[in-house]
Every structure is written in C-alpha cells, then in structure tokens.
Amino acid sequence: MTEPNAEKERVVELLGGEWSDIAALLAGFDDELWARPALPGWDVHDVVAHLIGTERSLSGAALPEPPSDLGAHVRNDIGKVNEAWICELRGRSHADVLADFRAVTGERLASLRAMSVEDFNAPSWTPAGNATYARFMQIRIFDCWMHEQDVRAAVGQPGNEGGDAAGESLAEVVRALGYIIGKRGRAPDGSSVLIRLCGPVEREIAVVVDGRARVVEAIEREPTATLTLPSSLFMRLAGGREDAQAALARIELCGDLALARQLATSLAYTI
Image (cartoon, rainbow, N blue to C red; front, side, top):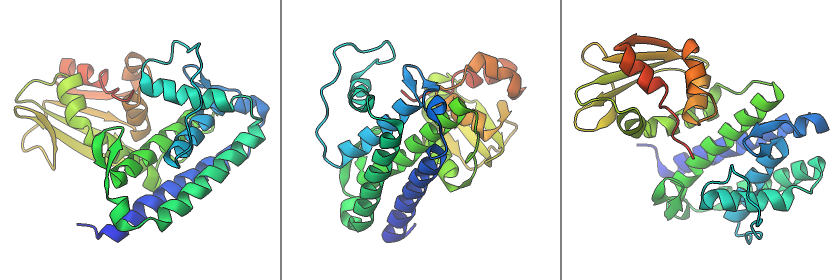
C-alpha cells in the first residue's frame, strides 16, 4: 500500500501538472481556435469555463444563476450546474478566461498542497458516489485530462496522450470496466474479455464474467473476445467522444466477433 502522504502528493502533483499542461496549450491559441466547437453546445472557451467553474465551486464560490434557456446538450442537474458557470464566463475575453484558469488552478493547487493528509482522505461526495476527497481528486485528473483531449481534438493539436496523467485517466476507466463490460456491453456469464491497448499507453486489461464482470490480473484460458486498439481511441470511446460504429474500422476484433463488436460499440459510460 502507498503511504498516505506520498499518495496525496502524487495525486495533487499529477493534478497540478495537468492544469499546467492545459494552460500551456491554451497560451498559443488565437481567437479562431478558442471558438472551435469542442463538445455538443460548447466551444473551446466553454470547456475552459467549465473547468474554471468546477474549481471555483470546489473553492466554495457560490453557483451563478443557471440560464433559463438551456440547450439540448443539457440533460441533467449536473449539466445545469455546468451551464451556469459557462454562461457566467461566456462574455469574458479569451485572455481573461485563460487568466482566470491560471488563477483558480494556482489557488486550488496551493490549497491542496496545504491540506492535511487526514482532510485529504476525509469522506466526501464524488461524481462516482460517496467516497473520499482523495478519490474526488483522482476523478478530477481524469476529467481535466479528458477535457484537454477535447480541446486538442477541436484545434487539431494532438498530444499528452501518454504519460502519468494519461495513465491515471486510464485507471479511472479501468475502475468502471466491470460495469462497462457486464452492464453496458452485456457480456454473458462465463465469458472473458481481453482489451489490448497498443499505445501511446500500452496495457492489457482482462475482464471475466462469473456472476458479475470484474477486472482480473490475467485470463487463464483463451479470451472469449479480444479488442485491440490505441489507448487514445479507447479513452475517446469510453468518454462518449467518438462514434463507436465509425470507430470499428480502427479496432481489431478477435474471438467471438459478435460479442467483440457488441462490446466495442458499448464502451461509452461517462455522462
């Protein structure tokens, strides 16, 4: 087991590094890149406003009044909260939004570094249910990295798809693979699945279904179905960023092809 203080430092520095990477990426953008569509209803400016709003909320800032006219991309209460911050910051210049992002993430990083290990590991609400504040910050790494990739895809500047933040973000998806394979993918009882990621993050992830789907160290026999694909594509599919049917041409399917295809088109699980 990792010593608690070392784990706190690891998570906090990973998050701080991800914020630094995002700020460095944005610093080179002109107005046209800031206005590129990035996600349904959001351009690059809006994605950054969302990141700012989340960190301000975690700092205790009051939520702005949500807009009365919500777009079709807003589908739940979390979406309403997100949209409140986006509308609040939509009138800010791009330069001011970048300054806001640097300011709030700098404040948050200082606050996290100063937090005691006990407070960092205290019980807390998280987007994945009740857990600890440390768990919430792990999810923040995933969320920020995914949104960095949204921005990079929007402006045609791929990068940062390997490394520690990418590995931590992949670990977040691996935690959900039992649900993804068993519930969303409907893999039958007694089956096994091997997901082979061929880079930039290279990994083999094994899942068995024996009453419930769960990640295991290895599969003792030939997997029922195998999916081989780049880690960047796997993450985009898990995040619902890629059309799964269109992506099939870039995924090598082996074993039970019907099951492999069913799983490859059922990877999306984030809201």
